[in-house]
Image (cartoon, rainbow, N blue to C red):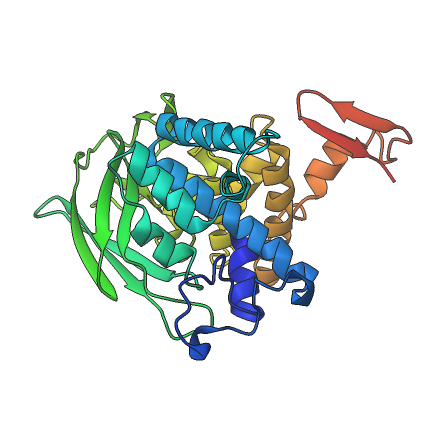
Length: 350
């Protein structure tokens, strides 16, 4: 949903969920949501997706328990308004506006969501973040830099907090930073130190401990990978730069599906033997989500085309195809539908 909203605002029209604070005609965009008959179906679909994301942000800001109390309060008011002897003024409670919702929130809680509504409901646009990091071994800190690109269509400056999750040798650590300027630089304390032992169990955010071969990583850096806003709390477009080994580790060992898709998209830019081996491992893994494995096959094909002059051995996905689709000790494909519970895939041979 987030990608669809960003794509629509970049390529089509800005999305404003509420035009109530309009003070002048210059504030009115090319699409006015007060006239539903004048809106395209594409705009309505994108606006519905953005509204869902904004409600999710409000839920995270005020807390799930308080959010349920607010919804119950609104339901009670609406139920009362449906009674036959209800007054005309009470029937207005059947309609919820941004202003009335904000008023209920301020009544039941001490939190003010006006700034959130101003940024995401009354205004259009999504921030575009460009990030990178370096590791200072002398001070044992991660030097993180985030830039906000406001030059392209549909982008805007974001003011607020952002979660940074760093996967280190000693585990996963999250920190919250505050974005206020166009360029933000932060120093994140590193909890790990480089070790000579290149094979060790690494604790992950999921609670699992996995064996990793660390021979390919930078011997001066204990950072395995970094994720920006891992729980998608902000509607944003993100371009983050880290070494190919970081993306390979993230794809292979991170169990979050969105993280794996991010790594797959980034690995298209790093055609190498290590990338090829990582993609092959994930493609063969029955523990990975099937859509991740499907995307992995597409990326592996892209890498194979990029390495056409240096590629050696079996073609990119040929060995996988033979193992899944072909009969044992035969060069012929199977003629029936093969459903594999171990591979978590349903495959149909041609």
